[in-house]
Amino acid sequence: MLSTNNTGAIVNFLGTVREKDKKNKKILSMTLEHYPLMTENEILKIAEQATKKWDINCVSIIHRIGKLYPKEKIVYVGVSSKHRQNAFDACSFIMDYLKSNATFWKLEEFEHTKKWVIQDKKEIEALKKWS
Amino acid sequence: MLSTNNTGAIVNFLGTVREKDKKNKKILSMTLEHYPLMTENEILKIAEQATKKWDINCVSIIHRIGKLYPKEKIVYVGVSSKHRQNAFDACSFIMDYLKSNATFWKLEEFEHTKKWVIQDKKEIEALKKWS
Amino acid sequence: MVSFIEKFINMIIRYFSWVKDIVGKSEEIISISSDIDTPEKLIDHLIKKDEKYKKAFDKRNVIKVAQNKIYISKSTKIKNDDEIAFFPPVTGG
Amino acid sequence: MVSFIEKFINMIIRYFSWVKDIVGKSEEIISISSDIDTPEKLIDHLIKKDEKYKKAFDKRNVIKVAQNKIYISKSTKIKNDDEIAFFPPVTGG
Image 1: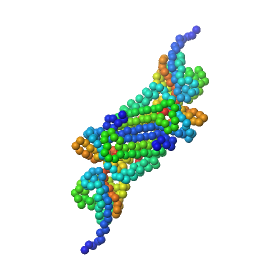
Image 2: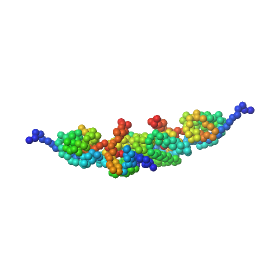
Image 3: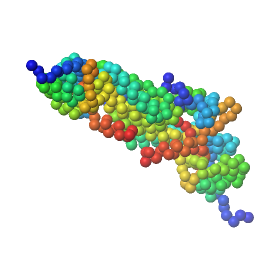
Image 4: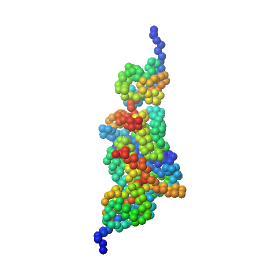
């Protein structure tokens, strides 16, 4: 699907469950909660924004929910375009906005505890490059 | 392989043969010539530079040679890292340097003619963002 | 004898992530005075009701709000039958 | 009688893409005077030898040079047994 319309470039992003948290503690599993329907709406909005901002052909976004284990895929974003810079920029833009707008929350599970992940301040900073 | 060392992000780039050239002429096929060994050396240099410049885990680069048809893959670059911005930047950097340094030449084949592709001036411009 | 006629409105309130954990439920239907017409006022109302809400909204500037599944500010007007959601900044992707 | 002793050196010259097409071959071994010790001088030597080279190096500023598979400038020293390659700017990826 991503190779239609005279495509010359495809950029894929894959986010995976890390094996350790920021404090280097071993992560056993991770549960992704989401807000049904709001999440889908937000993802659609982000994809539409990207399509308006860059000359791209196709966008594909998949985000998993529920319990996931280290090394498993969490999110996939694929963008195809005629020229590569548009695909790189649109894919990076979509990831930045997914990270700060799409209503998902990660619960990290360690040996004896569980902990909701706190949003990194860098995620808000990351959006500045698009304005 | 790309998911070792506490990986959280994988960015893949895929370059494909377009169906039309810049003047909208239908491309029947494309032949990629290269300079054996020099090409490999240049690719290795670029990968090493990226590894020095960003905190990334693995880099994978595949470039095809010989005769290829529209929609076929030409080049694949995969970069894994802990944090996504490094993977996006390193992958984009590798592509920019591949495009301007790796010794490959494209011969486009049309219905009645063949034509060596001329390097786009934008490719040299593209490198400026990394200096 | 009351000197005014108080009008009541109903709302579905949803909580996610640690807000949900502290409040102790993921959703509830509440009947409130129609004077409560912004998320700000709704939070004020909730924290007076129970210690759990007080704790959940302790860092209220951090909490995000959605009205019928669309992000809104805490001063946006909310109304009868709205679905209002409270949650921390998102951490997916 | 010659008033100087001319020393000869050998080089493999390789051509790629349209440079190869115009020159009409992809490689050749040449024996040249040791005075020819830069790509610049080598190009000067070749274009005097044959019309094909003159045509291939017509826009010589565009042509890239490699010495033993490493990019060099046209003023870099080259020597006996070197593999020198001439080619247009690359277009892979």
